[in-house]
Image (tube, rainbow, N blue to C red; front, side):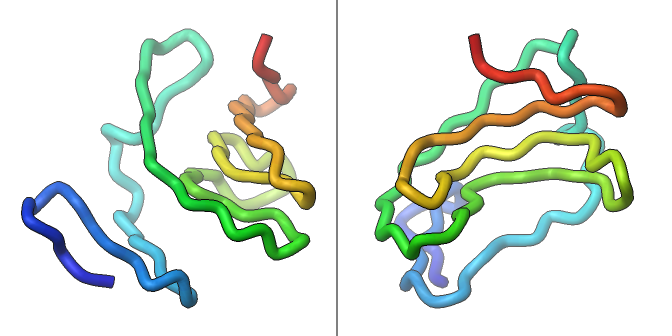
Length: 89
Protein backbone atom coordinates (compact mmCIF):
# COMPACT_ATOMS: atom_id res chain seq x y z
CA UNK A 1 0.00 0.00 0.00
CA UNK A 2 1.22 3.52 -0.75
CA UNK A 3 -0.04 7.09 -0.64
CA UNK A 4 -0.83 8.62 -4.02
CA UNK A 5 -0.82 12.29 -4.98
CA UNK A 6 -3.05 13.30 -2.12
CA UNK A 7 -3.30 12.53 1.56
CA UNK A 8 -6.82 11.24 0.80
CA UNK A 9 -6.03 8.39 -1.59
CA UNK A 10 -4.29 5.04 -1.27
CA UNK A 11 -3.00 2.51 -3.76
CA UNK A 12 -3.07 -1.21 -2.97
CA UNK A 13 -1.09 -3.96 -4.68
CA UNK A 14 -3.90 -6.49 -4.25
CA UNK A 15 -2.08 -8.77 -1.83
CA UNK A 16 -3.53 -8.78 1.71
CA UNK A 17 -3.78 -4.97 2.00
CA UNK A 18 -6.20 -3.18 4.30
CA UNK A 19 -6.59 -0.02 6.36
CA UNK A 20 -7.67 -0.27 10.00
CA UNK A 21 -9.07 2.95 11.50
CA UNK A 22 -10.20 1.58 14.84
CA UNK A 23 -13.52 2.35 16.48
CA UNK A 24 -14.05 5.88 15.12
CA UNK A 25 -17.41 7.37 16.15
CA UNK A 26 -17.80 9.23 12.83
CA UNK A 27 -18.05 5.84 11.11
CA UNK A 28 -20.85 4.61 13.41
CA UNK A 29 -24.40 5.13 12.19
CA UNK A 30 -27.77 3.42 12.25
CA UNK A 31 -30.54 2.85 9.72
CA UNK A 32 -32.18 6.19 10.61
CA UNK A 33 -28.99 8.23 10.04
CA UNK A 34 -28.08 9.88 6.74
CA UNK A 35 -24.75 8.69 5.35
CA UNK A 36 -22.80 8.39 2.14
CA UNK A 37 -20.06 5.91 1.25
CA UNK A 38 -18.14 5.67 -2.00
CA UNK A 39 -15.27 3.57 -3.30
CA UNK A 40 -13.57 2.79 -6.59
CA UNK A 41 -12.91 -0.94 -6.68
CA UNK A 42 -11.25 -3.20 -9.25
CA UNK A 43 -12.65 -6.66 -8.65
CA UNK A 44 -10.67 -9.82 -9.28
CA UNK A 45 -13.08 -12.54 -8.15
CA UNK A 46 -11.57 -15.18 -5.88
CA UNK A 47 -14.65 -17.36 -5.51
CA UNK A 48 -15.13 -16.11 -1.95
CA UNK A 49 -16.70 -13.11 -0.28
CA UNK A 50 -14.63 -9.92 -0.67
CA UNK A 51 -15.11 -7.01 1.76
CA UNK A 52 -14.52 -3.47 0.49
CA UNK A 53 -15.61 -1.60 3.61
CA UNK A 54 -17.09 -2.86 6.83
CA UNK A 55 -17.62 -1.94 10.44
CA UNK A 56 -19.17 -4.71 12.51
CA UNK A 57 -19.44 -5.40 16.21
CA UNK A 58 -18.17 -8.82 17.21
CA UNK A 59 -20.58 -11.25 18.77
CA UNK A 60 -23.79 -12.99 17.86
CA UNK A 61 -25.55 -9.90 16.41
CA UNK A 62 -22.81 -8.39 14.18
CA UNK A 63 -24.36 -4.91 14.35
CA UNK A 64 -22.88 -2.60 11.69
CA UNK A 65 -22.47 -2.39 7.93
CA UNK A 66 -20.76 -4.27 5.13
CA UNK A 67 -20.05 -3.41 1.50
CA UNK A 68 -18.44 -6.07 -0.63
CA UNK A 69 -18.93 -8.78 -3.23
CA UNK A 70 -20.34 -12.28 -3.01
CA UNK A 71 -18.88 -15.48 -4.47
CA UNK A 72 -20.03 -14.64 -8.04
CA UNK A 73 -18.98 -10.97 -7.93
CA UNK A 74 -22.39 -9.43 -7.14
CA UNK A 75 -22.35 -6.30 -4.98
CA UNK A 76 -23.59 -6.67 -1.39
CA UNK A 77 -24.62 -3.89 0.98
CA UNK A 78 -25.80 -4.87 4.42
CA UNK A 79 -26.79 -2.56 7.28
CA UNK A 80 -27.54 -4.55 10.42
CA UNK A 81 -29.02 -3.39 13.65
CA UNK A 82 -29.27 -5.72 16.63
CA UNK A 83 -32.43 -7.45 15.41
CA UNK A 84 -32.50 -7.53 11.60
CA UNK A 85 -30.53 -7.07 8.41
CA UNK A 86 -31.81 -4.18 6.30
CA UNK A 87 -31.44 -5.06 2.57
CA UNK A 88 -31.28 -2.60 -0.30
CA UNK A 89 -34.71 -1.83 -1.78
